[in-house]
Image 1 (cartoon, rainbow, N blue to C red):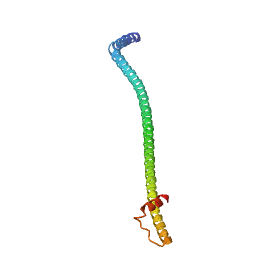
Image 2 (cartoon, one colour):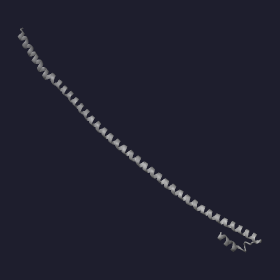
Image 3 (cartoon, helix red, strand yellow):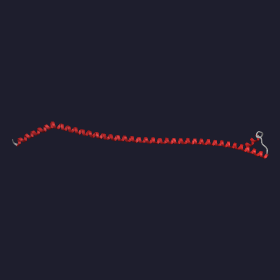
Image 4 (cartoon, rainbow, N blue to C red):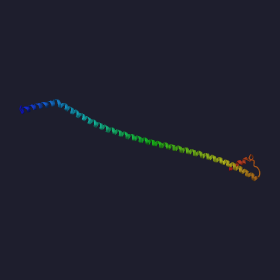
Length: 156
């Protein structure tokens, strides 16, 4: 065989091999490559979607944390106002109770002062009677002179 015949036979075999490869081998490889490319594209899309979902979730978490902080600050302020209100009420009640105690003590002191004046008047009247007895050198009868003694008591 000559080179030309061999070359023609090799070209025919090569063309059959190319046709066989294009018909039976290349489509499954191309399909596998397309599927692989599609899976990669789907994975990248899913990753992008997950990244967007994560970002949205982080924003929601931050918003809820901010809301929770605001709520807790509001509750804390309300509790402080309530505590101040309770303290003010307690102070007012204590002041009122103190004023009542002072008023009662003043009234009691006034009553004791009146009683002391009465006792003092009686003692002064008794001393005045004794002094008058000594001056007159005779006994003064309290029953007989009751009117005189009561006038002396009111004058003192």
